[in-house]
Image 1 (tube, one colour):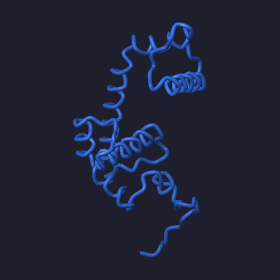
Image 2 (cartoon, helix red, strand yellow):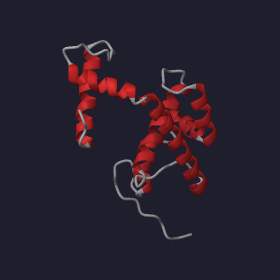
Image 3 (tube, rainbow, N blue to C red):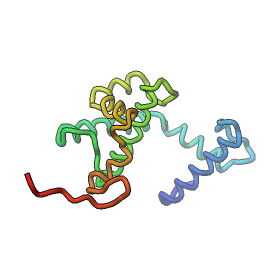
Image 4 (cartoon, rainbow, N blue to C red):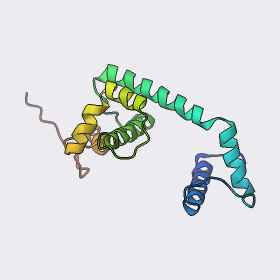
Length: 154
């Protein structure tokens, strides 16, 4: 099955997620669902885990470059791929700090801490920073989506 669009991917992902939920987290697909089994086999054969590792490393490098240029890790909505990834990593790191289950390895947690994720995640836990609001802050809006105006007096 060749995917023709993002919609196809979303459909296949939803189908796989549904199957996993119905089978106690397992993606061992029975023979009577041949199309879904072929998709899982294709993902395995293309070494999806290696691709995911490469993507993670690439986005970390992008974040390092962003921080070098801007002095912070609050990625604006104009960079949705990086911004979504940063929000995901911050949420994972927050779970890591709280000793809750999370997908971060010790190595990745250290790499994220080295770039400044630790500080922002600790603020999130204290309620001092809400990474979900970053896109609105960058657009000059408050938490309710109301436009904020900066004072011109200095």
